[in-house]
Image 1 (spheres, rainbow, N blue to C red):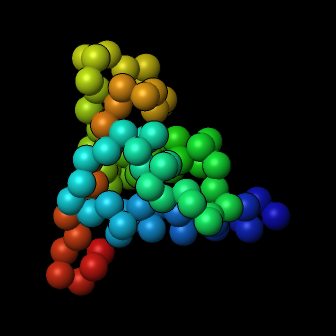
Image 2 (tube, rainbow, N blue to C red):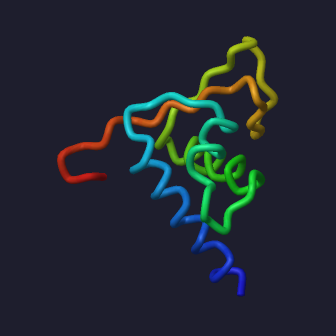
Length: 88
């Protein structure tokens, strides 16, 4: 069961990397632009960047200069890399 619950979040992370390639947005902006007609909630949109950052797939910067490790507060900006030719 745990695997089946994790898989949709894998799909969300892949979708975020693809849909926001080359952009920098806050988690709130990501949620507002991406969550319509999806089964995901704000908690999923805060957990997904945490995992992507751990994997080194995104960059994160703080607008306030400070950050509590492992969290995604509203003042954090997520930088998605531009996708490469293969779409990865």
